[in-house]
Length: 212
Image (cartoon, rainbow, N blue to C red):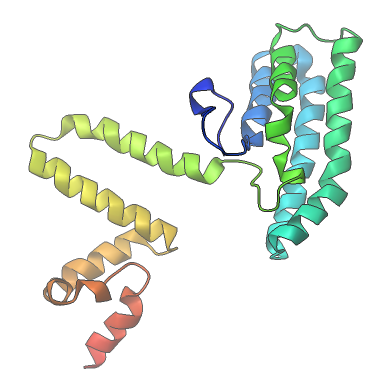
C-alpha cells in the first residue's frame, strides 16, 4: 500500500500494488481550493469518494472479516466506483475539462492508477488508503528535523528512545505523558523488571507494585 509515486513501484517484487485513495481525493481537493471555478466538478468526485469511506467506516464498525468486508464493498462501493469512472471518462469525452488543468490532472491520476486504487474491490483485506502509516512517517520526519538542533550524540540518542516510547504508547492507545511519568516515578522497579513496564501492560503491573 502506497501512493502512486514511481519510487514506490518495485517491479521485481512479487507483490500486488494497492494504491491510496486519499491521494486521489487530495488532488481533487487541491484543485477545488486553487481554482474556484471548477468547484462543482471537484465536489462531485469528492462526494463519491466520500461514500466509499462511509462504507469503509460501516465495515469497520461492524468488525467484518476480510471476506465479509470484500463482499460488502463489492455490493455497496462497487456501484459508486463504476459511477465515478463513468463520470471521469465523460468529463474528458465531452471536453468539460482539459487534460492539463487541475481537475483534468486529478482525473488522469485516478484513471492511470485505477487498478491499484480499486484493489479493495478484489482482494480480501486490501486497505483503501495508507493514511495511518503516513501519519507515523510524518512524526518521524518531524523528529528528524528537530534532530538538527541536538548538541550531542547522547542527546539525540535519548530523544530517539523517547520518540520510540511515545509512538509505542500511541500504538497501544495509551497516554504517552502518563506513561513517561509512571516510568520516572517507578524507575527503580523499571530497572529491575523492565518487562513489567511496557506501554500495554504497565498499568496492570503498577497496581500490583502498589498493593505489595
